[in-house]
Length: 359
Image (tube, rainbow, N blue to C red; front, side):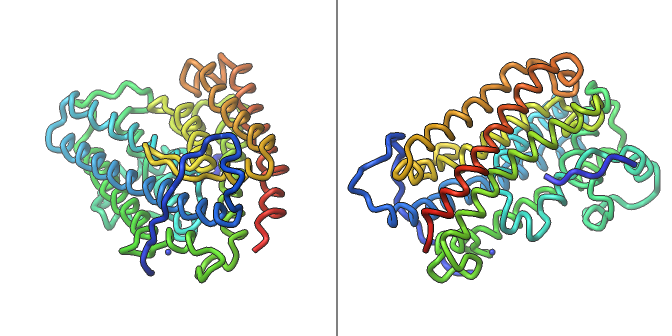
């Protein structure tokens, strides 16, 4: 996710067998070097690639729902489009648990998830006679006018009370092109990881043994761990803290749909998915097993802090843009839990990787 300032990867993919983590350090006879290879392989094909595949599929569903709304502006079609938007956000926010590689290098993230919406420029665009076809959207210089959040704004309205009849023809044209643009971005992102495309998944799998990206396994591990640290920092010190400190609901990430707290929880859930190598029924050998083989108390600490951070969101019972005003203690407790998790990842997990992955 990229925030707009508001102060005005070829080859074939080899599938590796996965084993379920038993949370007790595993078989003491297992070889650490074997497991550290399996962790990278399983992350690539059990979490990374499936996440982007699911995102691509959900982007197609959203585009279809918005196309249907454009054809027939009924409240039922509006509700279906809103549900598709929320469903896609759930996957995307979890995929933000591994924001490295093509998603960052090729600017897929900022092209679809820059926020908050610039109301002035969006209103100006909609009031103009400028064409709003796909190519026009792709050429927009203001990134916050592309992606999830202008779609959210049109689907819910500024007050969250949108009716289908109130969506203008120009707004419908705009979000139809936006959703097609989003579908194309997510398809390109998936292809960058897939065997038939850039095959970035294989570059992760072959780290330290021929990868064109990661000369050493340690480099791949550090990229993964830095992704975990990064998303914790982004949520705890950015997405949540900035509007909380400013007491400004307008700069919350997803204010129109009231989806922000769900977004944030999915970010931390996505990071936990990476640590344990799980995603939508896929389960492999995760970092947790590798850590437990050398330091089970550290694995226990990390898992407990992940659970504490994720569970803390349950105390925020209203949309985040309201919670920063009415549930300040609960918001602060959640930020504290996320920052505590981040500190453990940064001060203990990252040094563990540097010490133990030395190939």
